[in-house]
Amino acid sequence: MTEPRSDLGIRLARGVQVLFEAMGYASMTEVQLRSRRRVDVMGINDKGHIIIAEVKSGPADFRSDTKWQEYLDYCDGFYFAVGEGFPTDLLPDDQGLIIADEFHAEALRPSQEFKLNAARRKNVTLRFARQAATRLNSK
Image (cartoon, rainbow, N blue to C red; front, side, top):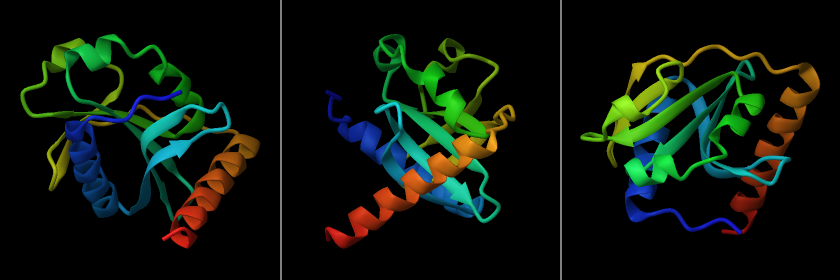
């Protein structure tokens, strides 16, 4: 069972979504992967490129996270998203970095490029679309 995200995490995710939209990505929060893990924010652009942001509300949140590396197999780009004042030296240097607040975000470090194979890309894209449609229809 996953724990509910903190209020700060929810606010940071909103800022990440603003950034993803500016980058040309449709995004959604709390996307469940085939592995049953949930990513904080996922975006897909019109070319099918998939990016993920893992939101960290504080150092303890990062230190207790043992699952983020599993997300690398489900995207073309991966970012940590944190609030201003987060000690970014705790985060791996080889992953993208986003500084966010509730209203906007900025990518301070680009993500390395990962390449999904065609079958995984199709699976992730279809899961994203089905979850989006389910959420839209439940409102």
